Image (cartoon, rainbow, N blue to C red; front, side, top):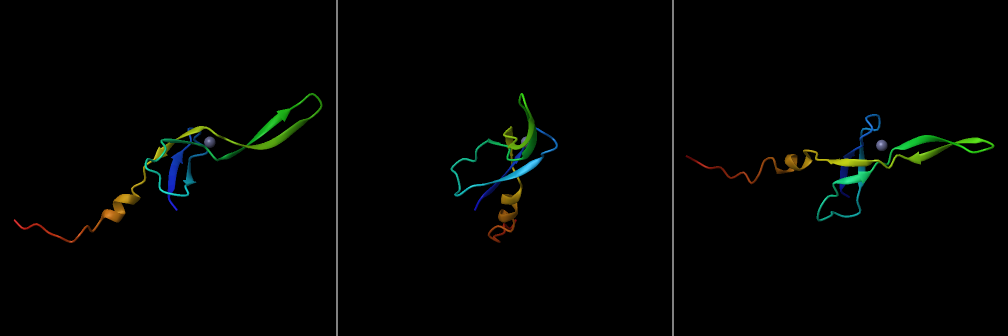
Length: 80
Ligand SMILES: [Zn+2]
């Protein structure tokens, strides 16, 4: 299962992983932050604290994992 790393603009949230069911043709450039934040909701008679998703647009972070797979290559060497 492919995993992609995204970085939330909220520094405290940092990077998070997004799991995808299959390999997309093109990796989405942004994804909503899945970080849970506690938000206080105040109504006329009481205030409640609820856990909601951050949901901020987070940028896709390219990780050098693919480069590691390429390392070693075919073993063919050029002479000269
Ligand atoms: Zn966030």
